[in-house]
Amino acid sequence: MVRNGIENGYYHEITPAGFGIAIKAGKTLFSKQSDFQKVEIFETESVLGRVLTLDDLMMTTEGDEYHYHEMIAHIPMMQHKNPESVLVIGGGDGGTVREVLKHKSVKKVVLCEIDGMVIDACKEFLPTISCGLSDPRVEIKVEDAIEFIKDKKNEYDIVLIDSTDPMGPGEGLFTEEFYTNVKNSLKKGGIVAAQSESPFVNKEEIKKMYNLLKKVFPICSTYTSNIPTYPGGYWAWAFCSEEVKPLSYFADDRYEDILKTCKIYNRDYHNARFALPNYLKELL
Image (cartoon, rainbow, N blue to C red; front, side, top):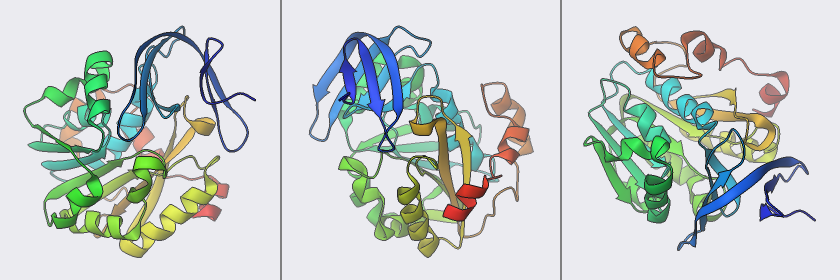
């Protein structure tokens, strides 16, 4: 039986659905057990470059990370009239923070990541992804987001939940209490975007997550995009707000600056993300 992780010169990840990916692995650059999980970064002999895994599960690769980070950041950011204060929960690799900082309106980004080892390892070995973490607008909090968010009221224009799967250190981020606290941390007109798993592989998890989100947010939609190295190659994010409906506003004043920095994001692609396949509509 093939296990997740590096074996016989290949990194393997097999999904609960019984299929997965294999990547030709090179030198291991970092491999340690933190208080929360196994953190590993390794070279590959592929177009993917370096890879970050947590507990032997794919988190990000140099080669395709923009598929994820541009989607979690720019879809909500471009639908807010003036995002100045942004909270990123999870995302210790720094890719989401990097994309948020491209918006000229941003004055402050708080990164709340439970595992400081992830941040330190990515700063050293994934500099093209973590480069935004040294920006003076960024404040890094190495702590549990469940506790961090409890007393935050009316503080953030955007909250991006760049969490791991609903297991291990990420498990507590998939509760009604947590989402309620996130909602309370938003300013008027605020938007939340949260990674919400693979519509093809994680159907039960998506059902559970959106049932919770719909209890908390009067507006709760989903958008999707492809991510080559994630389970199923297809991913979903939740778009939640008390006032802002998807596609009801677009920040034309920021668009050209964002467009010229992105590999996947553009206005047409943005609009198309909210068109869902029939099987996902039925799930939700």
